[in-house]
Amino acid sequence: MHSLTPAAEPERSPWRDALQRFRRNKAAVTSLVFLIFVTALCIIGPWLLPHAYDSTDWDALKLAPSLTNSHFGGTDESGRDLLVRCLVGGRISLMVGILTTLTSIALGVVWGATAGYLGGAVDQVMMRIVDIMYAVPYLLIAILLVTVLGRDFYLVVLAITAFSWMDTARLVRGQTLSLRKMEFVEAARAMGVSTPRIVFEHIVPNLMGLVLVYATVTVPGVILTESVLSFLGLGIQEPMTSWGVLIHDGAQMLDSAAWLLILPALMLSLTLYSFNYLGDGLRDALDPKDR
Amino acid sequence: MSRSSLLEVKSLNVYFQTPEGELQAVRDLSFSLQPGETLGVVGESGSGKSQTMLAMMGLLAPNARAEGQVLFKGDNILNLPAAQLNQVRGPKLAMIFQDPMTSLNPFLTVERQMTEVLQIHQNASRGQARAAALQMLEKLRIADPLRCMNSYPHQFSGGMRQRIMIAMALLSQPDVLIADEPTTALDVTVQAQIVALLRQLQQDHGTSIIMVTHDLGLVAGLSDQVMVMYGGRVMEHARADDLFYNTRHPYTRALLASVPRIEQADDALLAIPGMPPSLRNMPSGCPFAPRCAKADHECLEPAPLRAVSDGTSDHGVACHHTGNHA
Image 1 (spheres, chains in turn orange, blue):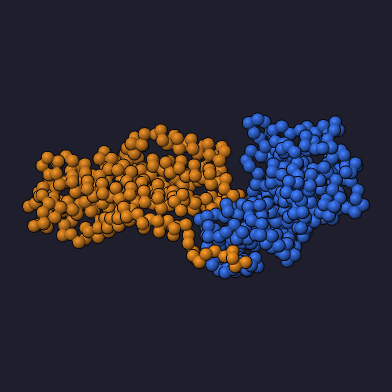
Image 2: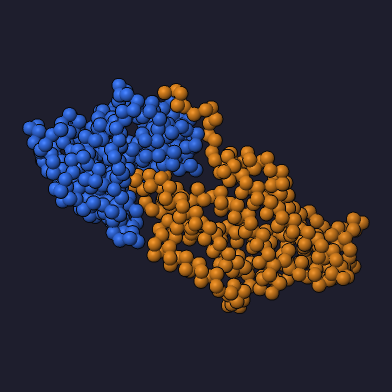
């Protein structure tokens, strides 16, 4: 009987295996470290810097970045400190990005797993609703939402969520279709496990790898969408700011004050790159074929 | 079989809706099972044995439909609504599957999967369920059950996983255990261990077992009654001794003759000529007739399952030629 016992490697979950592979991927680890650094900087930075994001310094309008005065990142045309604004804007952009991704992924997983597992008419109806959502022009709806309900941070999250969950739903449905035919699902049914429990306790854990990867590539998309909404005056409003707003404003000053574009654009693009590399690394780490 | 049966199947039919029309996978199947009894179901691939078991568990594919009655303690399982069906399968009627490599969820620990049944059906607390699971693993002689509970399925060999599946199925002390080819995916030495385990557990708990297999040897050692299926029909159904020593159906005889024996010469392996019929073109008469040495014009008519007298017990045979031996 003892010959049948497993080798001495206790509690090696599929997640732990993935973590080990992830650690070997230098680009992904660097990206993760960078993202943690940027997030921490955005959270703590504004308290440490001597200027408020909305206070005007009349003696330093459109000041170029320099280490000799207190405006390290320069100032904009109304004399507001650019570095503080970039960090405060980063808070908003990251929060919109992460919050919206969480809600849209959650909705997509529930929707897709339910449709995929139940199949038949329920699946048909649920996926046609997804098709309809794809066809709806989201900017129009976003404008309507903001006009009716007014401008609000959470409204931006809601508006972007409403039009970004469908990809996840389709992806998850496809995976669920193949998972529900697996024997362990049949075994769970044979144990008298109820349908909701099978979907959320047996199928969803098997989807988490895929969903995690997808989430990391959704974040950049959401941050960009927020920039678009803000650009159209539907998102974050002055004096509050976000990376999207800063880039938009900076682009108009390109000739006279290029730093107004370069600093926020650099922060945004590095963050987006990092999320993409992180997603790549996670995908490789979680790919069972790699085992 | 007039005693009150634990499980009684009456004229079960299973149909599949396909683009080519309706196909029948199981025809007019009946049997009954007493507490503590073992039924062996034998047949080639595609004989309808697995579909019969799935029908009994309410696990048929969406395009399949079952007719007839599956009475478990008097309730017809086929008509139960989902919530009530879930009260029966698992705690009362458990099933273990053919391939232990795919029957466990790769992302959940053994503990989570084992304790689930107790937590759902018996409202056991996490601690109680855990203790019961540990005890069951010990009973199945799994070394270091504590570590086993915290492990994930991919850390185990096939034989270990099948034991875990059996432990899981037995945790809620079911009345009937359906084992659908439980040893097919395992190697021979492990097979013997699993069979010994099932036999011992049956003695300890008085569980009834339905053993589905294509291995006659397995059935011979374990079963009280044996049912031989072919083309979705029951060909022969008898007490195990009668079936093996007083074989009536030409198909059963052919099956027995094709079991390899160690004293046989190398080239003497007997095979039944031809292939099992596909559901799409099932012969209208006896399904075995095209491959049967004894077939004649009578066999173009379906042969009903008739009782033949062995003097001792029930022995059903679906053949027109049961009278002429040899």
